[in-house]
Image (cartoon, rainbow, N blue to C red; front, side, top):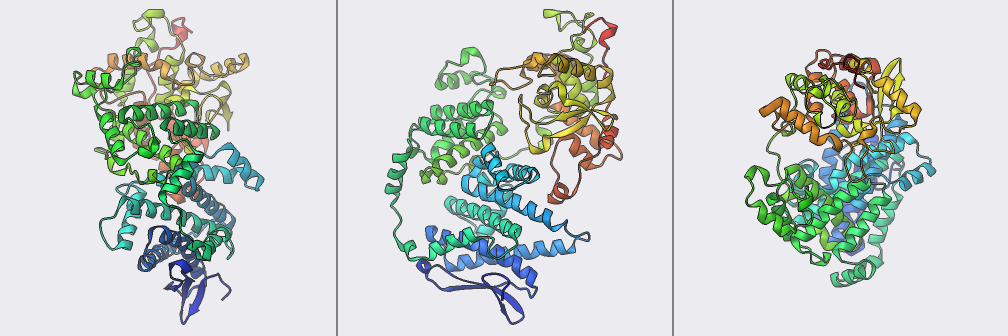
Length: 608
């Protein structure tokens, strides 16, 4: 019919028809697309063609039946029909075609990369970015890709019990016709979901029948006589992998660390991952990845739940064996035992990335190790995990001698006539008047306070001192008037003129220490001293929750303004793609409503 390969008109409706590869039977698979609209048929046909490549591949490896393949593809059609109906009911329509294609390219490429390399696809490496530039991709395209990699990378380890994994699991149950499925079946379904969706978006981005030539070639290879050759036995595959890659646990960790270094992951993050891998080896005794089993991962989680929360944080603990630490932990109070759910999940994520690396080198048994059932389930809402400061809390903290006048040196915690405008002084003030993260503030450079549209503004962005947590963290934050009054702009100007690369030079730390950690001990002392029992479940990060709470309670402040101030992404694709950044004046109008802080000006005490 000329619309697209595999599309045919049968009576009043279009059908998708394709021959199953010869080694799988060679019969014709035909599915009605349930539409007489050629444009809808083209889109559905592209998606089904893309998904079919993954299905045929899975049929080769896993023996998926023809009936299951048909059900799987029909579910995709129903899903896409619903999406098209929603899009057509949108009164204002889509944005311009070029922008849509750029968006589809970004999400399709992100999913394709995640399908190929798992969690390792995020973050985008400098080499990959440069390659995309040579292909003609704009900086906006590359930034979009980075954002989608960040948002979609969780698919690589999605559990069937939460998030996008629930959708995958439901579709798998419908396909199989049973409620229970094996871990290996879910892993295959998850891979199909990622690869198939990526192919569909790329097809949409190219908007032409030959836009998915690579996938078509794969299908032709599967259907060719060479595909009938027996695959290597598992033993042969393992021997081949061992010949190329050392199966020692420490060797895999070394290769993984080298990969992360090439991807420009921070040395601090790589070191943190290495410590988790060392703990895993110590807890399980695994020295060869060929011996790794699901039980080892369960054993590791059990150890994390019995470790003291102060595990190896003190100098005296660093040289103790894990067995010693666990034995000593038995005498500690129960509220000091067990790492947090967030820490356990983070450690499992790190191990998942390491296992993906090993599987990519030929150790396919690692793909069968599933952490989803071991992940702690949330027992409370995100906003309740770390409590927000109240207005009274913030006011009480800032009435400490650090901001009212203290003694010098060791007398910093006592009332006096001296104010030292160092990192300990500035970070809580800025956090309470912006909601910025501690590391974002501690890593500011003097030239990152600029006058934009006549407004003194923080330019929060990655720099050579530190990166940022998410793509949305890059933002412009107008200064609260009280920050200007306290001399922060003048301080930045003075330090920039002197050649300083940090707005708060006293906070400089080694690479393996988090920015802002230098004030941690003193700030916790201040909070405990000023708040007493109210300090429970609160930390420096509670300033961020405090500001968010204050902004949401203000009348007339739109949700998108709050997200642009805090540095959060939109709730959906529409808010991410079709809304512009909030003007500085609108952000300042909200920020200036934050309660002023009870701070004594340094010049009133002769401090600096």
